[in-house]
Image (cartoon, rainbow, N blue to C red; front, top):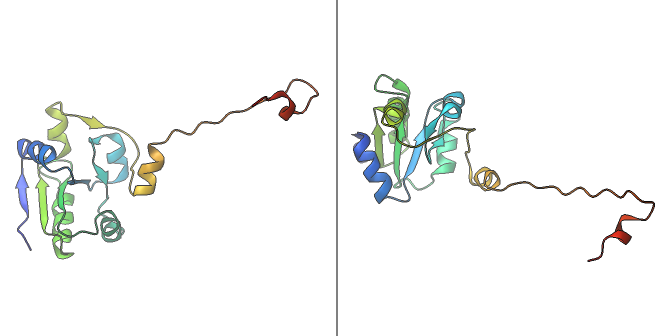
Length: 147
């Protein structure tokens, strides 16, 4: 297992630019994620479902993963990082300054609900549109439509 590496803001920016397959994990609770998170981050709260969610999100144990929490004093990210190491993940990075540092530097953040799996990501990207047709006559609606 490769050692877990602590990185700063500049290191994270370089990783984001150079590693398109990087998995950026916000391990804070959903309410914190909804308030704001780093752009492109996926919420995987460090709770009783963490192991199964990370396994579903990232079955490849050699994928590059960056974990972040709130700030330097946040123990959640360190605990999640340690757990990922125990699960056999190899390329782990800890953005220790956390999302407070990122936002303070006026770097891009997003707001909104947690999107966790590929189906939810696909559905979140689609707009749902409905067309309601009302007939104001006695004629059947199909007679009014000329296709």
